Image 1 (cartoon, one colour):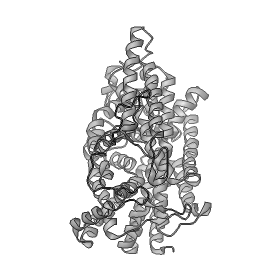
Image 2 (cartoon, rainbow, N blue to C red):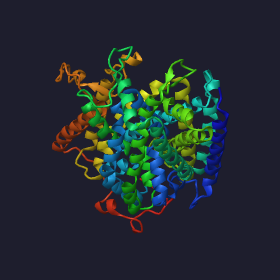
Image 3 (cartoon, rainbow, N blue to C red):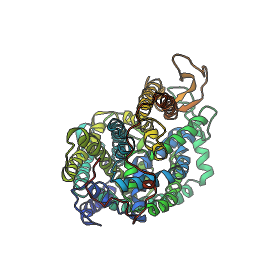
Image 4 (cartoon, helix red, strand yellow):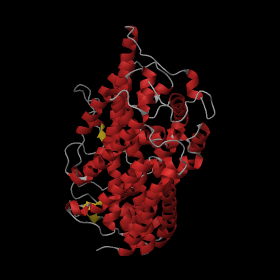
Length: 552
């Protein structure tokens, strides 16, 4: 049954952001949009407010607003890991992003792989970083579609087969068109609307709904009772409103690993490189934790849904309940139709902003570090921009294909794998901002071993509740941790985040191989950066002019 009032409100607000998306091409227009500095980085001149909305809209996605409370609804306290990881994130990245901004503006770098190419004089290492970024980003874009589809499904657009995905296809065709025309300016402008709607909905929800269901004491009581109910498949409790002895280590390593991973994603760094100067980034790193407060309130709505007796909608395409619909269902059942429509639009538009930024970031990586490096070394800025625009279309519709032909639950698992994947670029990108002590070939070796070991450990993880024997999540029991057949923690049921383990292995290999290669006096490659490059700020004579022709 279609909820017409909600659908009409949703459509009107969606039409508004579509118009804004096309108008964004003229907003803050500087140079020619046929240059990656302009199309892919918005002219590198976004100020504090625009950067705050852009980076916030970039990191706090539709899937975040759908999945975090859904995880709280299904598993309990473990889902709250998203709050501490966003709290520790900003102090960790405060100084590295300033250094990355400076060196990128001095040399005209558009992507993190550009920086790696210049820092180590290694096109292979840059290629590895670029491919890793693209592969890790694809399922992330697909998950924005999962969030958008959960809203469409709640409004009654829950058909089976390709027809059931038609509204999603229409939405992404529109997104693809205005992103193609306006580049990064489109999601930057739309992020204003998205964040205003999100804040409005969440503030109303966390004041109105707890009062309606007897206060937080009653809500936590209902959640505790539900979590104690045994899972019919496994026979174990569904979850817990407190961390247990088995998942405390997982909680800590997942929070820390996620914090380290988040600003390694290409779309995060795209927002950083689009800002005007170091002072803008400093103010943003201070102000962005406001989103963490919002996320904490939002996560608790998973427990509110339990108290409200909300149940997920059955996905007509798979025949199984879709847990991602739990918060849209809560809003649809407890709010008036017109306000529920605003809430649905907030989540739906929240899918478009990060999806656009992610596709632009992936397109920049393809263009600068694969197309220009290996396929057309003499490409002009105009040819680069055209290639990036086309690549952004392919990336978007590749993500749509994910949702059409792959079980959405599997794509969620792929996103967890994506975090493990992107973490393997930390030594080559983040550590390189401070030192070149790690040898370039050691970084390649560390990436290969860390990636292979991480994939192997992920393969070992089952998910009995979902009837999966392999790739069932990212929480590994220490009992399964193996080193050449040796099980150092045999019998342990304590869990740990695979990405953290794989990163440690990566770093150990990189250090050991660096020692060996340095002893053998193997060439380090040429570093085109200098110490002063990492401290240049807005107005410095060292900065490369925006839209200048960058060469390696």
